[in-house]
Image (cartoon, rainbow, N blue to C red; front, side):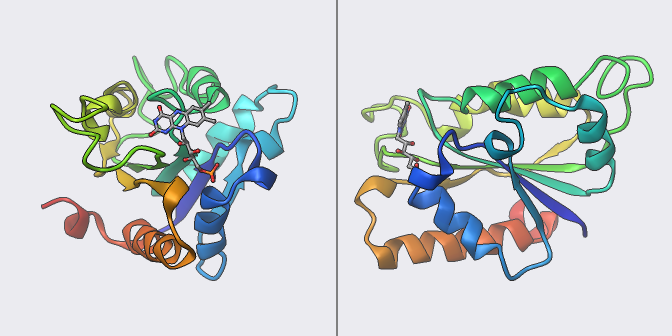
Length: 178
Ligand SMILES: Cc1cc2nc3c(=O)[nH]c(=O)nc-3n(C[C@H](O)[C@H](O)[C@H](O)COP(=O)(O)O)c2cc1C
């Protein structure tokens, strides 16, 4: 299976957690890129992005959770790249059956992301606009990977999160969905 990880971190140089997750993917055959490094002026090359998407069976979107959503350049990427007649609508079948995964890292704890918790909703609930975007494009939406409480994580805890991330990125859909 061909996999691509599209990361979106506004300042990867200042990142501790997402940088560590990317580092963990270095020794496996997965194409990893960062939108903010690739598009410093935010002028997304739509044709190139669409052609690249065709080459992969699984696309992972990895980002730090910012205000209950993804960083804005990734939102722009969705807006620009997932076009009518290409990704959805008549003839828009290019993403049919591709596997999509969201991988995010949060300052909040796992216990805070539930009804009655400090953040009130689960991450899966909060990801619904992205989930629906990708299923509207006829993709398979895989369970979200979350690294919780990352700001307090020790190096050992961060390594554990990164190991789990690598496992999730590599795992077949049948293992992830049960
Ligand atoms: C602008 C901004 C918004 C954030 N919003 C949230 C949020 O809504 N929920 C949350 O749990 N953490 C939030 N955080 C914490 C980030 O998710 C956390 O700093 C990030 O996952 C750490 O990853 P990094 O080391 O790769 O930057 C926010 C951080 C910033 C800078």
